[in-house]
Length: 260
Image (cartoon, rainbow, N blue to C red; front, top):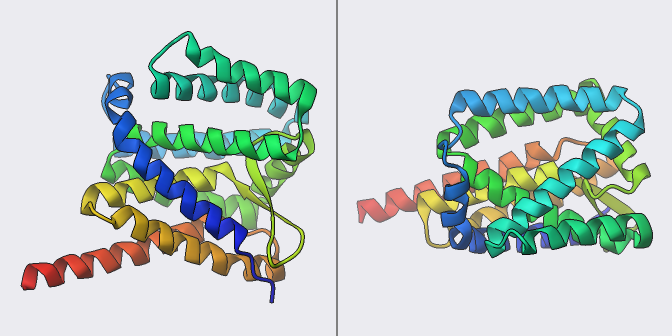
């Protein structure tokens, strides 16, 4: 049985960094969300749009994925820099560095670095856009779509393979250890994990973010031997399982504290 420690460790560190950063940039995020947070209806609509987009990209030439990714990545990097620094002029530096690196110096290390930056920025943006209820609705429908597109249509796998062939930072490509080979982990999975970790931290406070990240990391660790046997799997299922177990643990702890 293959065991991997790299992905669970990176997810654990990443989720805690996001939870640490979120309250520090939240005021700027709220200023960008002048129209208010997404409603449940908005969240469901966005999830459906993403499902359709995956189908379109899977059936389209790779060139379309490349063009749309270049536009989207530049936008997210610009917005991330603007949120973190608050300076419009500084915010153009990071997208510029990405384009120069991608077209002239690209390699696996740079791919993973920019994938982490994209995941970090998008996680903060999504956390600022969703409420507790809309987060649950978004994650629930996204998990269902993930299952359908991985097991049913196979389109999620097709888009992932195109992204890897183009060298796009749409997933982390991590060496497995002590298992051998490489493991791909989509940025969408990191977005989902970050969103529910932040929501738990907001709801329960204290060490809730850390507890949630530990549960998610453990379930991702359990996913690796299953992937070895069955192939590509929807990671959102394992992430959601980690959220559910962490939520139940904190609810039980909260109830015991109330009964004292």
